[in-house]
Length: 449
Image (cartoon, rainbow, N blue to C red):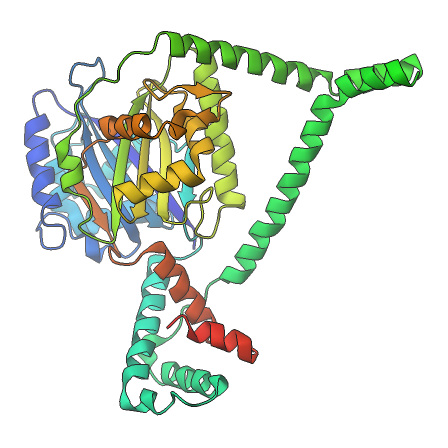
C-alpha cells in the first residue's frame, strides 16, 4: 500500500488564534488520553501535526496547518479522522474560516472543506515505501516476540544448535502463533534496494551524458581548430546541444549575480528563537520539525527552488526509497510545501534522534542538497554556485534553522519508539522467515535479534 501526505492550510478567524491554540495544546499535551482526537485508533495514520502560523509583524494571515502522513487515499484518511476525532475537529475548525455549518456532522461537506484548503506537496519523501502502519506494527511484534522466545527456557536450549536449526525453531514458533501471522511486503526490501541501485546507475550515466552534451559545442570548436572537419559536421555538433549549453551558462551567470548581490545586502539574522520548540524535543526516540521561511523575491529564485524540489521529489520516488534521503538515514517522512501564493516555504520532517544529531546529518551528508533548497530563501547563510557554502557555515546555519523553526501545538507518531533503522531491521527479519538461506545468510539474519 502506498503512503501519502496531506497538507491543509486554513485561515484562522480574526481574534481566535489564542482560543485555537488553547484547544490544540489541550490535545497536544495529552496525545494518548485526550478526549478530542483518538489518534491511536486511526488505523492508517503514521504521523500527524497541527501547527499555527502566526502573522506576527508580517503581512501574512494567521493560518492553521494540518500535516498528515498515512496509508491509502485522501478520502480514506479523512473518513478515519472524522470517525475517531470529530469532537476535536469541530472544536478546531469552528475557529477557522469557511468551516461548514454543523462541522463533522456532515462528513462529506467537512471533507470537501478540508480538501478545498489542501495544498500540493512540492517534494515528498517516505523513509520506507510500501510499508503500511499494520505492516510496521506486525514486523515489530514478530521480532519482539521472537526475542522473547529465544530468552525463554526453550530458546536457551537452542543456543548451541546450528544456525539452520535455530531458524527452523523460530519459523515454527511464528507459524504456531496466529497473532504473529506475517504481513507480506510487496515488493520485498531486497528487491526495492536492487531497483534503487539500478536506477542510481542509470542516473550517473545520464549525468555523464548531460555533461558531454553540454560541453559538445566547446569540444567541437576545439576539434575543428585542431582537426579540420566539414562545415556541415561542425554545424550539427554546435546546433544540437547549443541551446542546452547556452541555457546552463546563462543560468550560472544569473545565479552568481544573485548570490553576490544577496551577500552584499546581507544583514545580521534577526528573529526570536521560540524556546517551546526545544521543550518538545527528545521526549521519544524521534522528533518532529516544522520550518517556515520566506522565499527570496523574483522569478529566478522561485523557479530555481521549484526545479530543485521537483528533482528531489523525483529522486525520493525512484532512488531514495529505502531509509536514505541523500545520505540521511533517520527520516521517516519529510515534505516541502509552498504556502501563501508561493511566497513562503514550509518544511515538515519526522526524524530519529536529537535536533543536534539531525543537523549534523544535514551538514555532513546532505549539505549540498540542503543549500540548493534553502539558499533560495531569506536570511540563509551565504551560498556559492547554488550548492556550496550555505549549510557548511555551521553556526550560521544552526542559528538560521532555530530562528525559522515553528512550534507545533500537536504532534502524533504511531510508533514513537521505533526508529527507521528499527523498522527496516524488523521488516528484514520478518522477510527472512521465508525462502531459502545459506548458513552465512542465516547468521546475518539471526544478528537482527
